[in-house]
Image 1 (tube, each protein chain N blue to C red):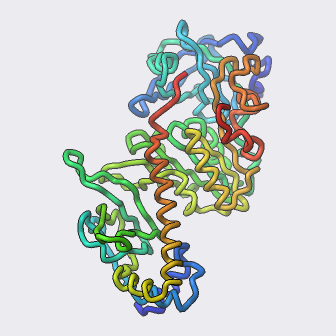
Image 2 (image 1 turned 135 degrees about the horizontal axis):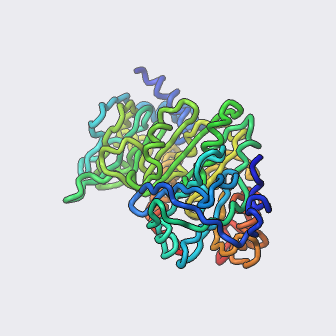
Image 3 (image 1 turned 90 degrees about the vertical axis):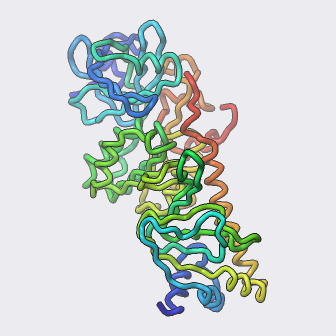
Length: 157
Length: 287
């Protein structure tokens, strides 16, 4: 798919919407289309995190393996979601498994490529970090709500 | 014509504090600690008419009485239906009641989900955990009125797939073209094909026009607060968001004051209350 199409797709996704067109072109220059069949892994815990994904279609489960319990599903991500921020910070390793539970179409972004562009243009870097921080905040708040186990602790009579 | 809830006719001259004996017809286990009981009046006749969202006081003889939302079909004609979670001695005794045994019933009491008033709009039902039980009558009424609605959305969250209520019914609804169903759980093992995450996150992608949406929300209060925030962020009018406020009701007829939320009696103005009217108290502590 031509790079121009990735530009257009990015402009419709909340995480990237509103970025100037020249920045969208820079970002999309690090992206390529990818697809995953059901059961295929987009990422494995401990592997180098050299990319992140923008999910265009399908669903991905974030999982962690625990002895005796098999894989535990922590969260699912669907259309429009950004998957992965380990590419941003050393040691650049995935913390969880990411498995396609539906056929997935995604844009895979080369982490080193994008970090290089952020280093070269700090304004772009700041704006992307701000937007990724918003994604992290959203996930952190959701995780805190999950940790509360609100359905488990019911007040007595 | 059906008797109006709380009317002299509905209480058959007994007064609102005197329970009416009902015989349990069937007892179905929903989850590890939750059962659905169907009941009919011991002395014959039909259960009183009710509106979606209303509750009864269920009395386990010799143990105590608790408020439990009605979870059956408000169209009437069937037995009284309650889904009860065993969280204390009274609810556990109710859950243990076998077919043929009796419970006392007072009610129905309280306000209701404005399903009919939502004609021409999207009805968005958001349930967390046991919250699906008081919303089930609203769902059934919305399905019956579906042609008059712009759309119908049901979003359900639970602790795990095994702890979702009405699993068989949800599976049927997943294939029902009359509504959009979103299911999510806090955690799951591989094999679960639904979503994993908190229920407010389903709201962003749900198929409704926020400017023409009426939302009904029931669940633990923390879940309701986050859900209301997500609905407001999506653009739903605070006056069109309705929540169920469940407090420690004892008398159900505004005499004891145990269920007061600021100036509001949850047993009379509630349990179903428009968020806009209760917003100052919704996040209040020690209320």
